[in-house]
Image 1: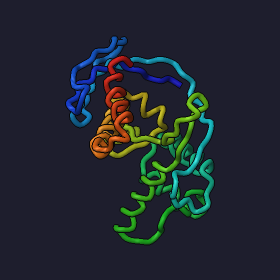
Image 2: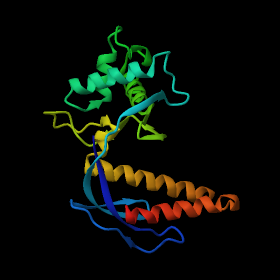
Image 3: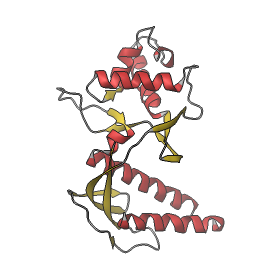
Length: 216
């Protein structure tokens, strides 16, 4: 599976690491994205790395109705391939409406517009609640599916579409959005707990991690 790397420049106004740092650019198209107060600039490149799923589990406290996570994952992948390589919440609901479908019990099947909107919420929660680890990264758990900006084939209507984590990251815009989300999360955690002296070393490491993106 192709994996994309990037050279980063981070300009941060959030603490001790406020200066811009520069990484060595790789071949590719230069891009920029804001993550809160951090401007991330990167040149998107490609390197090959096999990503084989080693383990799979439900997210803690997800109401899985006794359905095995492997069964749900396989069915979502089937729906995804049926619909051209990406999958939407509406597509999952349409398939799951069949009582024989393995995902059927994960949804509330009341009638009405409000019920359909609730099922969209349930479908989104389902897509975000399958967690995987890769054989090459056994200590890192992540979502199996991530939002991608791609639309359904032949459809001009903008929708929230999902792909596998690897496929979503292989799109430059999505890859940048994932990095920005990670940086925002780190900065929010830092802002919340920066007053706790016991966590000072961890907060320093967060600052260093953001700055080190310049060398990736």
